[in-house]
Amino acid sequence: MTSPQSDKPPAAPETPATPPTPKKGKWSWSLILFLAVIASPFLLMAGMSCHFLVFGPTITRSDSRADLGTLSWLPDSARDISYYRATGFFILFAMYNQDMACLLSEAEFTKLADAKGWPLVEHKNGFDSPLRVDFHNLPPRYAERYDESAPVLVYNNRGSNGGGLTVVYQPSTELLYATASNR
Image (cartoon, rainbow, N blue to C red):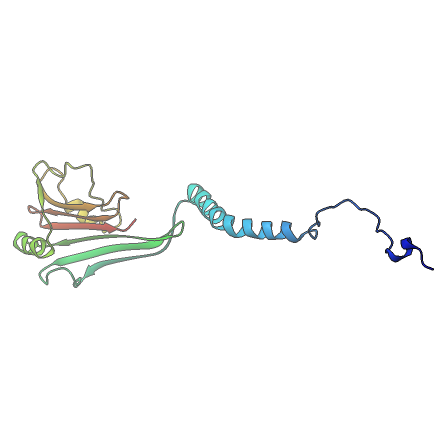
């Protein structure tokens, strides 16, 4: 004869329910990798900014030419052409600065300005704009020829970041100065 209790399986001991624990290190390495990927561009930019504050922008290449025969955008009658061009990087952005000076008759300059669509503003008491004519990258003969008290014709198209084009022409000396930058 069988007893009624023998038909039942033995009861399992009761254990408290606990959530499974993640493997150690799995989540921490994923989080570290995620933060490194997200933070690295910002750390790079911060480091380059500190470098700029301490050492200034690094110009990687500069080129200066005096007494060129011609430049592609100038009329053939332009003479005594010189230019200076510097290229480099500011943080992660490529930049350039270009200065040019030459001698050009007033009639030829007017034709050039019309062809390029430059609206000119005359400054009767010299270049009285907050912008300046800076010949420091060009041969000294241009600075010697420029008369700050003589009238000039100016085209200025600058962006909020300082980049753009400025053209200054002095009819009395036939001196054309242009500076361009993308900043």
